[in-house]
Image (cartoon, rainbow, N blue to C red; front, side):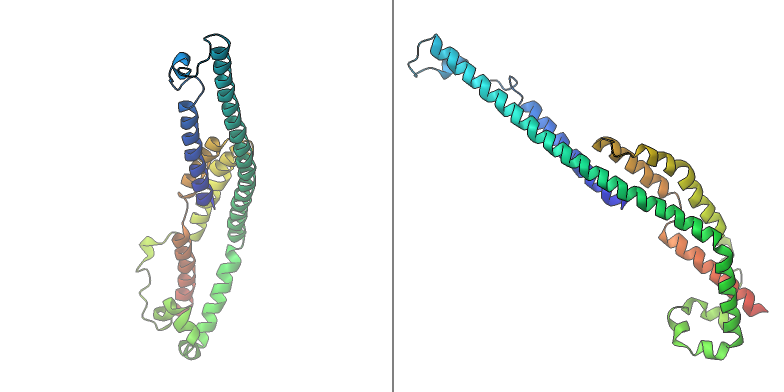
Length: 232
């Protein structure tokens, strides 16, 4: 969600920069043009009132054009501001939900380990039925070597990071840096400010465990409990 918001903000920023450059090139008085007397040549007007009227009309047209451009730009900015407010609210809600999910898993860790341990004991006691079950071949195929007694305990222990350690890391990221950045990501933030803060939040969150890391740590918990049960 953050990545999508960042891409949208980047696109808006590019459009805004392009529009600003265009307005600067086309600003009244910036574009060189032929002198008034050359533009009036051949019209047959006196050099007095006619020329003055033509110059005044030209200036008025330029002013109206510039004013219309500012009105359109102002309307687009208002639309973008409303869109930013909505997206920021959604992003903030998603990040808070992510933090609450980490806290819930942390306080539920004992229940998770107990549940897995009970399941491991059941599989050990009914090993023949379990090994002939399609469930093991499908969803729990990674436990087959343990249940068959061919698993080498500790073979990958050096690559395992305890689940509480990863959760501590994730919660610390949320409680410190992410929460501080979220306070800065307010509905009143400009497009450029929101883009900068969003990029910072993304970089900080990427320091925590990714999807594969979370999947691996859950598997490690399950494997450890099954190995323990099958030894006894």
